[in-house]
Image (cartoon, rainbow, N blue to C red):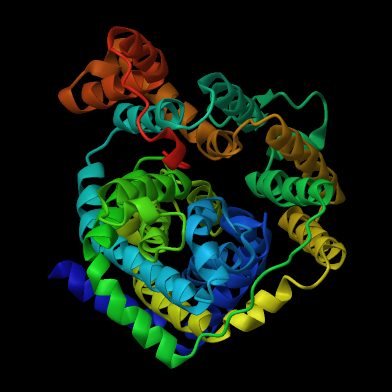
Amino acid sequence: MEELNALFHGFATVISPMNFLLMLVGIVLGVLIGVLPGLGGANGVAILLPLTFSMNPTSAIIMLSCIYWGALFGGAITSVLFNIPGEPWSVATTFDGYPMAQQGKAGEALTGAFTSSFIGAFIAVVMITFLAPLVAKFALKFGPPEFFSVYLLTFCSFVGMGKGSPFKILASMTLGFALACVGMDTVTGQLRLTFGFHELMRGFDFLIAVIGLFGIGEILLSMEEGLAFNGKSARIDPKVVFNTWKQLPAYWATSLRGALIGIWMGITPGGATPASFMSYGVAKKMSKRGDNFGNGELEGVVAPETAAHAAGTSALLPMLALGIPGSPTAAVLLGGLLIWGLQPGPLLFVEQKDFVWGLIASMYLGNLVGLVVVLTTVPLFASILRIPFSIIAPVIIVICAIGAYTVHNAMLDIWFMLLFGVVGYAFKKLDYPLAPLVLALVLGDKAEDAFRQSMLLSQGDLAIMFSNGLVGGITALALLMLFWPIISKLLSFVRKPKPQAFAAERPVD
């Protein structure tokens, strides 16, 4: 009951005229970002974060989170109409969404995608509403060793559960740790890695890094690929919406399964992209019409969209309750909290109740408003893709430069942003993941502080990381995750390989 009372108080905060207006603006900007291929939720939130510097934290987080919800909705539009995923997690939606559009059922596919996204997010928000306060209450008992073990688990989870080469993940994370070390040592006050440049005393601001790595890097990549958009048109009227809604209850099991997969992948640092693929693959295997997946099945749109939205939403649970982001976008939002003077973590639920419950209430309303906005404005947003990329790209670069400059009002930050943009472009060309770098940059100094405080408590004895069942269990789980790529290789040698059945019918799994 305590949670429900706090939630109703959060709704009262959100529905003030100014916050509701910011919610609408956030959703529209988010859909716009989601429609433009390559920009993505994390990039959009990073680029637009400086806009919120003059706002109070509650209004700022409502606007930024609604940009994120809007981007999650917007990615489906280009996937269905243009066969171009606006977001990485929308790739699986193209498998059945675009064939439906080619068959003249674009409105049905889009209605199914948007409604499934809403259902996935709603289930995840209900979970956050009741679970986050319990996790935060439990985390209040944490000391420095427990916090370090949780940070260690987060870093190691990226290695154990991340896709791609573990060595590339480690290399990316190491670079992030090195960048996080630049500036003043918070314990001794000594300068580190500044090489005599006074401008580096404040270290590398994560916002400059993410604007460059994600925003400029993607623009450079898109310029190289030379994007050209040719797609189907769509018009959604109430008749199409109601007819599609009549079909959706038949896929309740797919929706529930997708939401659970999404929640799990969101809380662990798996993310929305693997969640959408996993949900699509499981639905294909378990559906009676699985053989027809890839030829325009509505269920093939429902499964990835439910999982992606559930994962994107539930990634905020560890950020709010423990101060640990579950996705790149959550990492950017976490940085925003620090800029607004808030300390993410369990104390947030005690000291900033209005902020936390205003954010959770905005998740309910933001997704509902987002559903209405996208269902009514699809033709408008689809027409944006007909603007030449040569006009869109310079506008985005100017917005990035303004955002970087406003952080410290320093020209040097724009040069850093461009430098990070080149690094981001190189990472993407060489298939190095960016999320571990950003995570290490945001959390590196916090993990270092927790570790050094632990060492001061134990007088340098590493056994403190196994001093009780909780910290020992988390540390052991973290080490298991770190060495999981090696363990799984060894296990694959022991097990007999399974025969490759239906290989031609498995585009995903």
